[in-house]
Image 1 (cartoon, rainbow, N blue to C red):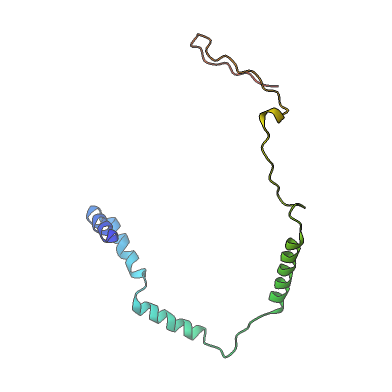
Image 2 (cartoon, rainbow, N blue to C red):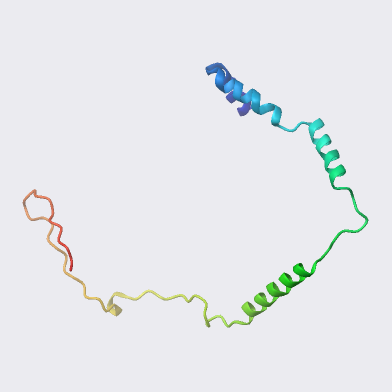
Amino acid sequence: MLLSVFLARSWTKNGAAREAWLKFLPTLPTGDRIIASEEEIQKILPKKSEYLVSTSEFDDIKARLQSVITQHKRQKPGDSGPTLRKRETPDQTTTQSTPPQQTDSGDDSPPVLKRRD
């Protein structure tokens, strides 16, 4: 429904959109085109009595992946993985807090930025 409303509005507003949609619509698959493409696939890739199930390269990669998985499972949780650190309470912090600066000095001049060296 929304597509039909969109198409109707775009077709009435400008001819360029209508021509773009008319070029696009034939590319959409229809039932006949789907059947024809399936028949073409059957010609190119006929059914076989036996299919290739595994190769030596596949077996090598499978063995390597299995070894990586088993090594990962063998690792203890605290060895090299991420750890959760708890937040420090304000009395545990070692940084010195600076007193807040007075922002209301009475004049309307902009604040002065100073470089920290």
